Image 1 (cartoon, rainbow, N blue to C red):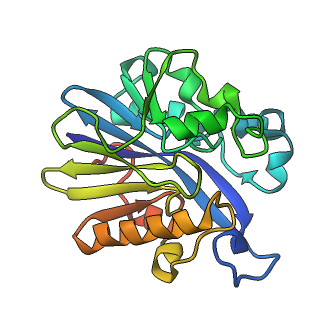
Image 2 (cartoon, rainbow, N blue to C red):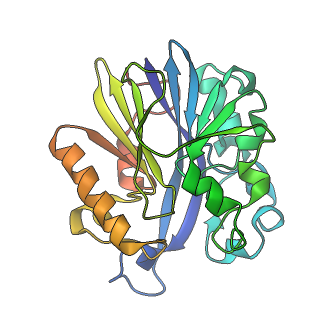
Amino acid sequence: MKMHLLPSGRLRMRRRVYHPDAAREEKIELPVISVVLKHPQGNVIFDSGCHPDVATDPEGRWGDLVRVIEPIFGPRDTLIAQLPRAGLTCDDVDLVICSHFHIDHCGCNTLFGKATVICHEAELAAAQGPDAKAMGYFPEDWDNGRPIQTINAQHDVFGDGRITLLPMPGHTPGMTVAHVALDRSGPFLLASDAIAVRGNLDERVAPAVTWDRDLSLKALDEIARFEAAGDTILFGHDDAQWQDLRKGEAFYD
């Protein structure tokens, strides 16, 4: 199995969202990351990033949210533009795994018309709830018009231990991470927003954008145990880590 890491947007936010002691006016840049997993039984996307329209008309796509989540990327830095670097087209994708349904993690779902979408059942319920828009759920992003497969417990995607989904609520009700077992590169934990930046893990600090703080802190402890056991943690938006990772045509296997 091969794992490709692709840029799928870039954002600017207040630093204190993730680092409570930061000055109010200080900003931080956050990469948006999509992961392509080329498994013998199918091609998988873990998180589809920002919709391409965000690059050209951010306010038209996201509305007032751009005041707090500022897109700072162009059309070339979207998953759809980057996918050929992993040797794929949209029609080659069999499964889209959504860690959660926030707009910077599922924006391209609708562009994978042949793919099955999988998420936690609590996440789907939240995205369909009366407060969905206020919680950052936009149906035009996460709903690709096909039936969505839901899970409610640990789930081995292909039954061979290569890609295992682990529910870790906290950031959102159905937040889910993925454990990926690679032959030569070793195990990775794709943390998404269960831990967006390294500092939150080291300092055991839940970001301001957290649905349930206690559950988020519990997820931090669980992920710390994976790291202690030798897993590489892929943080959801850590720019320092992102700069050092293999990207595009380069891959982990």
